[in-house]
Image (cartoon, rainbow, N blue to C red; front, side):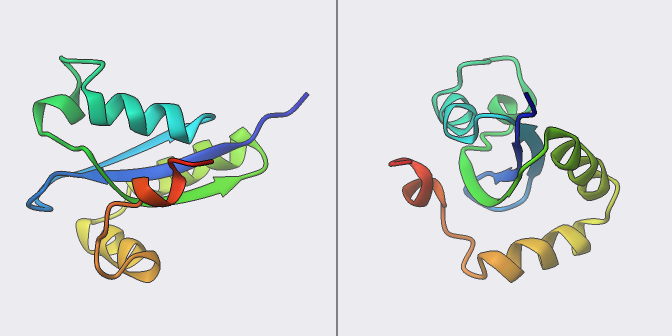
Length: 99
């Protein structure tokens, strides 16, 4: 059985830090970032609790490849990606929390 996945980007309240991640359960993973479940993680250290971008894939391998592509890109490219989906950089948690 093949599972899908999501690539996502989190930021802090000042939008100075970007974290790119990949998961098979976006709702749970974003909740973990927001609640600081992993207190020693990068996102906890830099208060990245705002979901500003996500994209779903039908195959986990596609999500992994996209995560690597995004991580390998510049801040400018990440900003363009975010602005294309979410130009106001709103917290998309409100969009996904009732999935």
